[in-house]
Image (tube, rainbow, N blue to C red):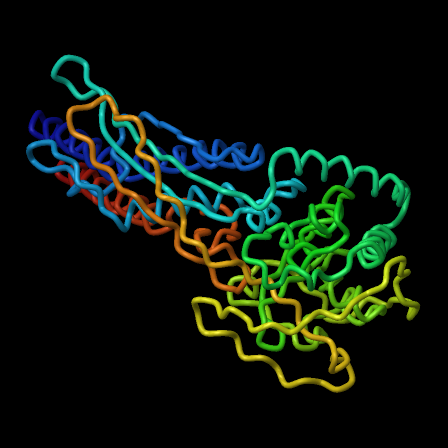
Length: 430
C-alpha cells in the first residue's frame, strides 16, 4: 500500500514537471507576441507623426530567439533569419489595415524608405541576469511632411462637408466621393520623369494640387472613403504591363473594384463598382489577390451618366515601366468591349529606386555583451512600392504559431494519457 502511494506521488511530480516543460514554448511565444504588438504600436504612432526615427526597448525574462543563439559562455549571436522575421512582423503590424483613415494602406504607400537596426542584450543584478533587452530602431523617410498631412486632413474634412454625406446610403456616399475625385484631380504627366518629385504619389498632391498619378488617386479615395465610414483597400497590380493602383470598396456586404484614375480620364463609369472579372486589363499582384475579402460576383447597377468634370482631363503619357522585383503578372487578353480607348495609357506608379539610408547606431544596451544586426527591408512586389519597404506588409496581424500550440497541446495530451494509464495501473495493483 505504501509502495503504491510513493508510486502515485512520483508519477504526479513527474507529470507536473512534464506539463511545465511542454508549456514553456507557449510562454516564450507569448512574450514575443507581446513585444511585436507593443513595438508595432510605437512604430505606427511614429509613422503617423512622420517622425524620421523611432527606437523601442522591450525588457523581458524570456529569450525569444533560438536557444542555440546563447553560447555556453553567455555570448549571444543573433540568428539573422529570426531577426529579419521579427522586424518584418513589427513592420507588417504597424501598417496593417485597421480602418483608421491615415493608417493602414495609407501609411504603407506614403513611406519612401525604411531601414532597421536591432540589438539585444541583458541587464544584471550583481552577477545574476535579470532581463533580456530587445532594442530596435527604424529610420524612415516619407513622401509628405507632418505639416502637409495636417493640411490634407483639414482639406479632406472640408471636402466631405461640402458633399453633405449625412443620411445618405453607402452607394450614394461612394458615388459622391468618386465623382468628387474624378472632377477635381487630373493625371500628372508633368512629373513622370522627375526623380526628385515624389508628391505625385500622394493623396496630398491629388487633393491640394489637383494632380497626381494613380497611387495618389487611390490613396485619396482610401482616405475619404474611410472618413465616411466605408471600408476599402488600395490594390496594386499591373495594367498593360505597367504598375497600377486602384481600390476595392465594401457595399452591401461585398467588395467592388473602383478605378478613379481611369474614369477621371475617360469621363464615364467604366471602372466603377465592377467585379474583378469585368476590370479589363487590371491584374492584381499575388499579395492583393490573396486578401481575405468577399468580392462581388455581379457589377453594381450604376446609371450611365459620366462623372461631372470641372477640369480639363489630359491623357496620361506612356512611359517605360520599372518592372517589379518579381516576374510581372501575365496580362489578360484585351476585351474590345470594355478596354479603354487605344490612346489612353496605363498610369504607372513607379517609385524611384533609391537606396535606404544607413541605419543609425542605437545607444549601447546596458549589458556586457551585445549582439546586433542591421537590416535593409526587402522590396515588396508590385511597381510603385518604395524600394526599401518591407515585403508583404498588408497581411493581417499574425496569429499565434499553430505549430507551437499544436506541439505543446499534443505533448500535454500524451502526458495526460500516460498519467491516466499509470493511475489505472496503480489501482489495479491495489
